Image 1 (tube, rainbow, N blue to C red):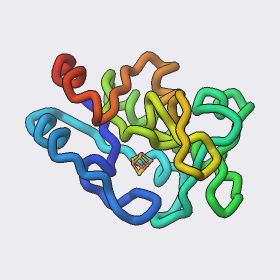
Image 2: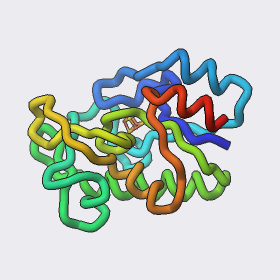
Image 3: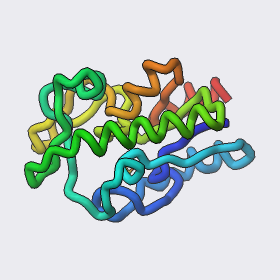
Image 4: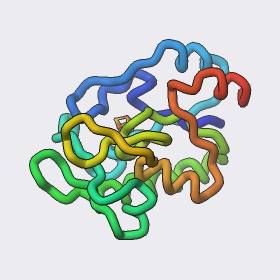
Length: 154
Ligand code: SF4
């Protein structure tokens, strides 16, 4: 069972009400059993919603309480992000998923690089909050840009 970011599958759950549909990923997973997650929706955030970034670190730092998730209007939505990550993990455990394909650069789902919290488009090395929690639990997380590595795993 593979867990996939809902927006990659075409669900309109992005902050701006759109999706990140990725044809290569959906075709690749056509005959696979998948579950779809959107941690930000799981965390009680509405769609559309203001964009959010992690300030003061990455997803791991958020889990350790030393960084916060702030939306562009200045609201602290750290709690929502942590709740969404926990809800995602609980579903993943329930279904026994060991592999995740999550959207690159997202403050929830990003796995290698995320926005740096300045809302200027600048990025930093690090994972989003959900990815950080899944990695702690030993779940392998790839993003949609790592297609060759994903193919090698399937
Ligand atoms: Fe939801 Fe993750 Fe997609 Fe953001 S990147 S819309 S949290 S599934």
